[in-house]
Length: 238
Image 1: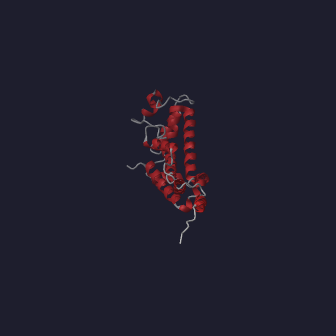
Image 2 (image 1 turned 90 degrees about the horizontal axis):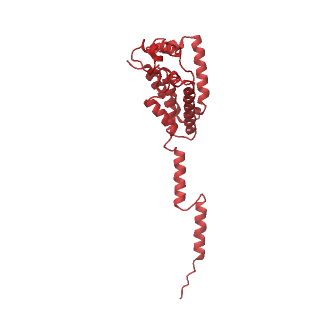
Image 3 (image 1 turned 180 degrees about the vertical axis):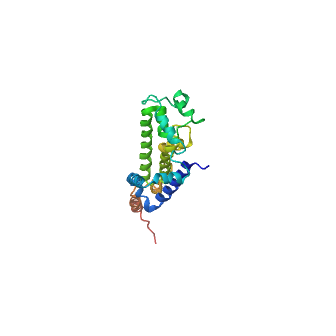
């Protein structure tokens, strides 16, 4: 069967990439926080008036427990552990703290929520560190978007879909391609310069090669006039 989480993230990513890649919508991405807040509030209001959440969940072929995920989250939150430091990196599934879950769901090795998984393994300290990484990634990506980076838009779409993916799956802090790509977006979101930066660099290089520095034509004209004036006037004997 098709993974509902992957399907939703793929469709959302395609919509975001198409919407913000249009030139007239480039400015709109600078106010994406406002759009996200308005969309979230509208979703909550409509969900209170109509069973919108239930409609969407059943639309992708899942039940209201998200295939028993809500039951797993409830059991995991009731586990007695250190709320500050957790059980240690990858430690939750190697201790008896996970027995209540593994006894009911054989072969499970994650709670299907990246944020809750981080809390179980590292406590509130790990959650704060994770939020710091996510905030740093977002600020870095948005700064590159403001500079006109062509690759930053792809990183932005991936960042948004990663946040949503970890609501029902756990890919944070794991040997996972999604986590690896997210870290790449923090280290260097734009190895390729924008078109404006490339044009500026080409002009600077051309000025440097011709020995000019912003006043190239004026400097060259003065030097040429001085050279001509200093040459001796040839005399012809008739």
